[in-house]
Image (cartoon, rainbow, N blue to C red; front, side, top):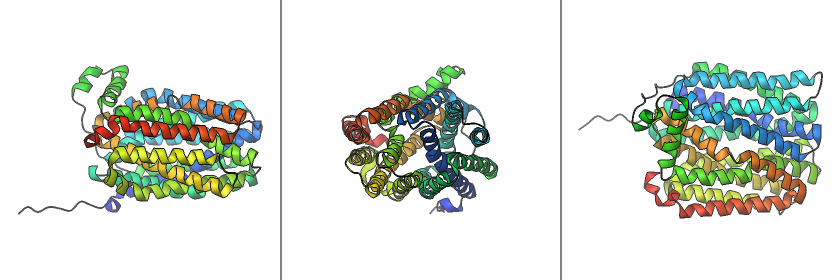
Length: 411
């Protein structure tokens, strides 16, 4: 008879508790710029196309950074990289309210926001790699669900508060609050300790030859050889193309089409993030009951249906409810997708695989944001919602013909 020690609870893990707390606080600040940046562009230009161009430029910066973010995350101290990304975003976002005291140059937005997008990509790639270094392997999907849930809790109130701040003091004040939260997050990371990353090895490391290009390609090779990650990357690229500009479209719909103020924009986006919170409660059971493939396909298809329905209503409460349904679906799909990568990828490769995954499927995002916002300006928001929603449903259902379902055992 062996003496087996029961697995420790997530909540008994001090590093996990601290990490969860500081990321929740940082998410609260993120939700301010999530609302404030599009509002600032809209206030300054009155153009949904300009909103899409800023979103697209940020996407390009993220893609470029993604080409080497994974190599950096696998080569250097990951906690230090998280802190560097936080400090950089703090300083960059703080520039906007500082400069806006004297002038209102739009070129600053086109410079600062894409740069923060690059550091955000570095943070996001590294963030994915540190979760398995904080929790046990069988706790990954629950940890991700908690992190998504805490993010939702923070962002439920964040957009509403950002709307009030923007209405009372202007969008630049909300951006200043976001800068402060990045400073707090960087300081909090000093209290988090990570388990050492396993040493590299295997054929993919020998093939890389130690150079940056070879190391990046090692992530691509692993991603492309996996029977689930390969089709998932292709399908997500199409989904991102269709949906990357939808936040701008929804904001434009509420403000310009329906004539509401900044505070109502905050209410609608807050209602949407309730869906992410609900996703954190249901994802573990959904994944356990349906498996990865059916969970991802079903959730993505339901998100597409909610997007299409956004074009059929002029009611702000209904728009908020549909936004919640959309983010509930995409939250389930996103948690499943990230957890799968963390489960099947060796620790020393996780940064490069994550960077390759995100760089590939975000590559069409800037084009999509520009196309969708231009389409909304030319043909109307309602029609674009119907087109985008139908497209997402078709992409999701096509996953039934790929290894996402057939290779369920690999998930």
